[in-house]
Image (tube, rainbow, N blue to C red):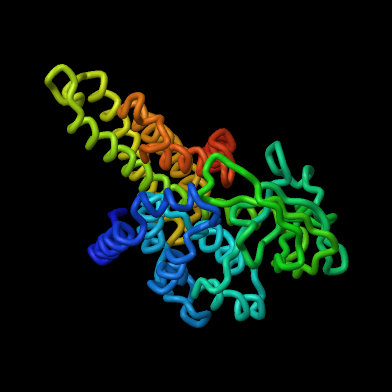
Length: 369
């Protein structure tokens, strides 16, 4: 079985790479970091015009009707560019949740808007410190009104709609709700990576629509996170490769004692170790993309494997990129910080590495049973 991308998908990669090199250089990322804007609105508009936000949405709902393989290719290049846009929140999470559990009316209303980028969506699960679980949920819905607080919500300060996980007295203890955020109180939350905004969202009898069946919210959430994990893994793979390339280029150009520092074992071994981690993450990403696109029974295993290896690869590559640059790599003027910030953010945004390690172990045990 060939897990690699096709010639057409690799052509899409080249086109995406060229577009982002032109429209999302590191100077554009720095402008968001140094400025007051929550994201690069101009870049978001251009991405939507290319149809990237519509990639996996069916044609009957205004999408392109392409596969998750194409979406994985786009995710990798967005990760390589450290793009300061709400793509993952809106596409991997909100759009997927509506595709997976939405009613016909909800799909007809929101999918065309999400496809064109007119609406930005997000997913609200956490309620503060600690691992989310049905028992820890305090946000609740009564008579079509949602009350509670979600923090942190990625892109929660700019999104128009949110898929919110709330507690339920039925089934698995949770339910999903679709909420228009104009009726909620939103407060920006500072994080390590200001190029991806976060918010605290307080709901006070905010109108909400059920998304899916009451009492099935937790199982739907786990399915959604498995699907999103594959796409996040590809974003992390793109970032990891970009960080490694940045470190390699600097090591080839920087001289010490009359030789490029790349010629010293201390540097070569670091970069070789990063290459091995990146290659493993890419291999697992192929498996995850296949499982996602084919809706295979192995998806929980493939998603957890891809997520763990990509998280490890991106963190290591971004960290060693700074180390390779030496004292200058730690300074504000150098671009090394962008990948380190994004690696740390992506490592926790849909659950920490230990959480996904536990999921991987559980998936292996299920498959072995």
